[in-house]
Length: 417
Ligand SMILES: Cc1ncc(COP(=O)(O)O)c(C=O)c1O
Image 1: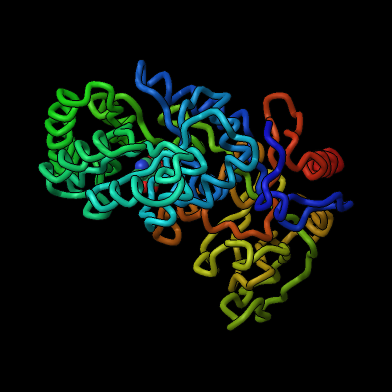
Image 2: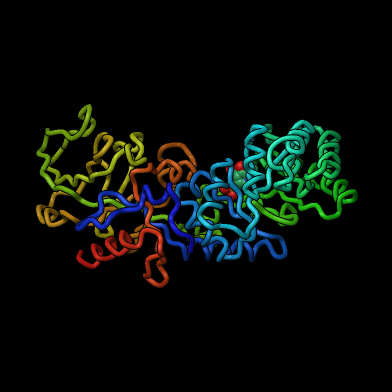
């Protein structure tokens, strides 16, 4: 396991005693299992684990290492600093693909860090060959030519241009044509009026023609949804993000695809108080008690990524029971319904689960996403930097090296409750 990165160290919990205000526990064994699950679906095709945006909020370095342990052969990120972070943290061996749009300067920096980059015009190839570490003879630029078959973002829509760029990459000194790629716009939508199939067919034809001229080229297109939906989309490699984290690319139940959510998000009951009939809680008095109600106050809010749109519109789990959020979510606090039984006062200090399991109850990122009309990706990406990520293994109950003291603390607290 690699040592901590600057970004992760910043967010790793210290050895505080007592309940943890807010923590995201990431089960690296689940990451490994999800990768193994994807590899089984992929057969001979390679798995590239997409760990951009701090591994969708899960912690890039720890997740990258777990994904590699689970059989991923490549990693992908969006930006040059993300590639540098991985290399700097000791992730040396695997190929890293930087998928995002890069300036000519960034292209050079990425290539200098030993990453592969994406190009779609001849100017980019020329810039790589004529400036930066390639021109200085210090690096070889491995490029992947992107054909835009319908996503309408990066890449060229023109197959002739894409083929010209591939030839230019082959011919330019210090540049290597490593791959050709595309990205699906509607792989997660089975009612897409054939758009996915049309993209796939266009790419199949292009990749076939390119392979005839460049037999060594690596062909890749599929994201998580495409892997689970269509084996024809697997080609030589698939770039999977969301499923690696055990979230469902179709926004439904991860269980349906044998995926295990890796991230649990927890806080605790900091205070319990009675809200008498007619009294209110929170900004704007958006909860007014219709009967005497015990409120639990959790020290978590939109400053942690628990969206304000979840006001009066979410549950948390406390002692295996769903408790509704009451009133407005503040930056640092949220109030939940503990019911009418005064015995709930004993819940001070109890774990409150925002995402995860307690007993037979489960709250998924997909559930939170549906409530606020977004996607699971955004829910975990939005968990903010002030929430420490604790990496652990639920299978062995052993903390990973990363954040070990915090993981121990979390378990100690659980035992105490
Ligand atoms: C180009 C590209 N490939 C692959 C992925 C991974 O997609 P997913 O997380 O749906 O598997 C992404 C993510 O947005 C992407 O931008």
